[in-house]
Length: 248
Ligand SMILES: Nc1ncnc2c1ncn2[C@@H]1O[C@H](COP(=O)(O)OP(=O)(O)OP(=O)(O)O)[C@@H](O)[C@H]1O
Ligand SMILES: [Mg+2]
Image 1 (spheres, rainbow, N blue to C red):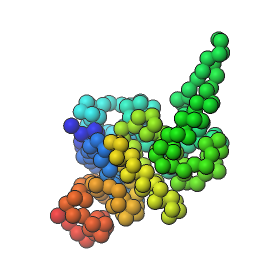
Image 2: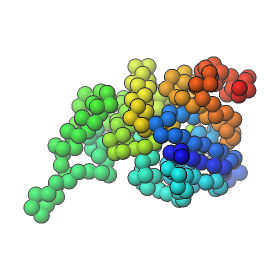
Image 3: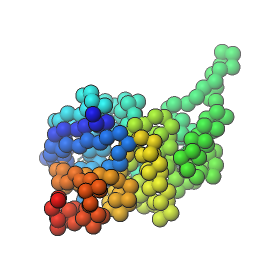
Image 4: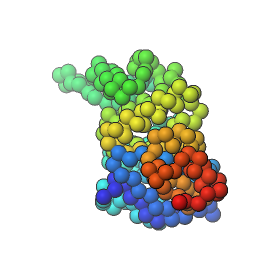
C-alpha cells in the first residue's frame, strides 16, 4: 500500500489543461524529485495534494483509503505538510510563534488561559536543533532570517507535528549555496525518519542527490517515472527532460 496514490488526475483552468490525467504515487519515507519545465503542472499537482485545489477528475488514496474534497487544514491534520516558497511563515512573528502558529500551547492560571511561551520556546528550539537546523535565536522575527532558514523552520515544524509527507515547492531556488546544502541535508534527515518527501526543483543536480525516484511532467502529462537505482544519472534525467533521450 502506498502512502499516497493518485490516478488519472485532471485539472483545467478555463481552457488550460494543467493536468491531463496524471498517475502519481509515493511510498513511506521515499524521496521523489518532481521535475518539469515552467508550466508543466508541478505546482498544480502539489496544490491538489495539499487540498488547495480539487481535481476535476481522478482518484486520490491516502494510506489506502480514498479521500475526497479536503481543505488545506484537513490535509495537514492527515499528515500532509506543504512548504511553499514564500508563504510558509509570517514575517512579523518570531520563530517560535511561527513554529506553533495555529497549534499554540496554553496554560491555565485559575480561570485564565495564557500562552505557554516558555514551553513553546523550549520545544521549538530543541525540535529545530534535533534536526540539525541552526537558528541563532528562536525569539527573532522571521523577517530577519534568510530564505533558506525559513524553509528549514517550516520543515522542522512539519516534522515536529507528525507530518508523514512533506512537499517542498522549489526550496532551493533563490537560496545561497551553503543553504542549499543545509536544505538537502535536512531532506535526507527527514527521510531517514520515515517521512516521505516530494521535492520540486529546476536544478536537477539538487534533486538527483537526494531523490530515489524522479517524476517528470511535461505539459500536464507524466512523461517519465524512473528510479535512480535503475542507473539514471542527472545527465540522463536532463536528457529525458529535453527530449534527447527515451526512458530506458
Ligand atoms: N490559478 C490558475 N489559473 C489559471 N491558470 C493556471 C493557474 N494555475 C496554473 N495555471 C496554468 O496551469 C499550467 C500549469 O501551471 P503550474 O503552476 O502547475 O506549473 P509548474 O510546473 O509549477 O511551473 P513552474 O515551474 O513555472 O512553477 C500553466 O499553464 C499555468 O499557467
Ligand atoms: Mg510551480
